[in-house]
View 1 (spheres, each protein chain N blue to C red):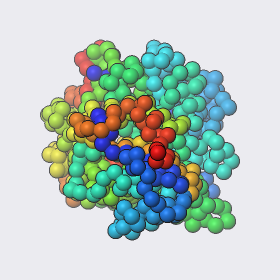
View 2 (view 1 turned 180 degrees about the vertical axis):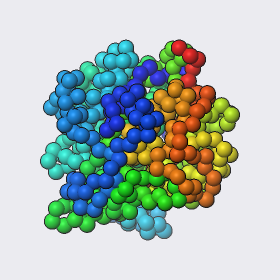
View 3 (view 1 turned 30 degrees about the horizontal axis):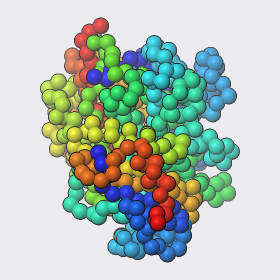
Length: 372
Length: 201
């Protein structure tokens, strides 16, 4: 069974997974209201990097001369790989990048940097990896799809190790697009709350190094499923069809009793959170605690699946179900077991759930092995 | 897995299962002609960007919409992804003329083509968009085969869909299925089919 060897998160809340988990459990957020950023006059809520701080940290790792997107991704990958002990230049290792828009902010100034494969090649190239890296670009479910793809690839025996990097940086391109869809909240987002009125954009990179073999105590990757609503390209199914079908598939591989929580998408848009409440209810999961992390990080898009999975793992290792920051009053048609406070648990298994444009949905099961 | 059916679309030719399909026009006109001959009742086609039109037309050459099904995966590989449409959207957010277009923005996501194919055909299975530097038969075959780790998946519409302009595109799409007759689903066969842009004498 595939196992996580090491990891890293680089976000406005910190430069390691532990720093980010501590920040979440302490109730901190990277989200604030921006006016005029990227030359956009309409205010938007977002968790954005202090770019100088990131470049300085990167320089400390010898990373310079890359685009900002590539720099953030490399900083996260470098730290995770160092901790893993794997040989990143081995033909047994494959690099997988998860991103939606990569270097899109260079579209006019440096179009050669924009294709996502070019970023993946830069990242894998820095570690002298001989294999062609692959990019998973499945809208907001990309990160989870990258983990599912990595697991399947390792199970097939093609490679022994996978370095899975999820990264997104924000830009005029992305923020204006989400604003044009009326999906962005100017203030902090409020997942599942009655007063929720849109998402916050987020920047982050998150990396997992995964192996077909790992120590007993490591987090193990269980079943994963991707399902399409086949309903609408920019709105979720009103019946939660694809999300429910993913959950139903993953629930064949675990009991509801062993689940500490469902780490949900919880974007804080009216339609997404409503849809998730329906899917959870249809799957018989209304009683299981849920947690949405976008109140702390914003919507980190291509990084979200990996970042939110890592934060959930880190919290469960400390016996805690993280609070859903921004939530106070129930606001969905079907009950959801969500809380504005941290809760305790002794359980060490969870499902990560995501949905995205293009009607796609993904769910994956994670279980921690025995104590180290 | 075996290849049950396959098709190849370039701006000037269409081949299905090794036989040339007679089409009028080239580039975007060729895609419109495919719509007229093989789809016909789906005006949403004309709201789509070129990459989505290409993917939906390719899928229409291989299968017809039927009852909803969860066992059909849709896996699209490309180098440029939605880059062509990125440029269209970018024009709507210039300093001088800032009116971001939500309908163009949605098509700047690489996986919308998999969603459009799924919607048109009522396929509710696994969908994924992958970006790789160029046509790579080995990667397409290996990634598609690894999707069979999902026991629900019985068949896949998969292949290469590249679009660098409204009149400049390149598609090789196959319907690969478990336990069915047809060509072997392997890199050698896909490489051979990729070269088949015309009917052999």
